[in-house]
Length: 123
Image (cartoon, rainbow, N blue to C red; front, side, top):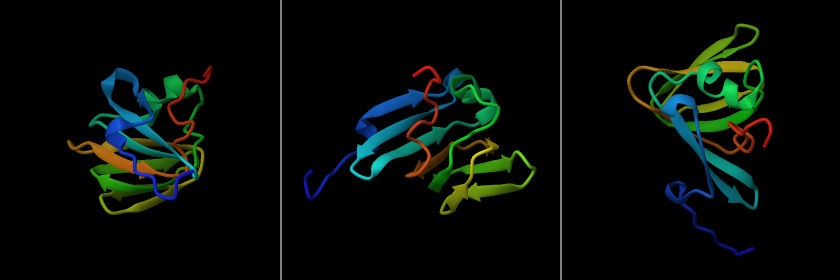
């Protein structure tokens, strides 16, 4: 592996669209594992736009990421909730739903939980 690597999310190694055109996940493969940039469009909700792809009752990914722009609310299966906005680091364990707040897309970078995110359960 090269000592210096440069990649761009605009030329991602893989792109996974969400249901109903409500956004996408752009993935880059790195020596340390996959890193993803998700663009969640206004109206996006995990239980509506990723659940049909994932095939689980709630999001079972563990996320450690950074919100670049927009706002999102995350609600754990047990009821605990938090809102995240631009500049926030987020750490969320498996077992949650989430949705975009407001009229602006929410853009997040995640270096922990996007490797299998929005990946069809058969694939």
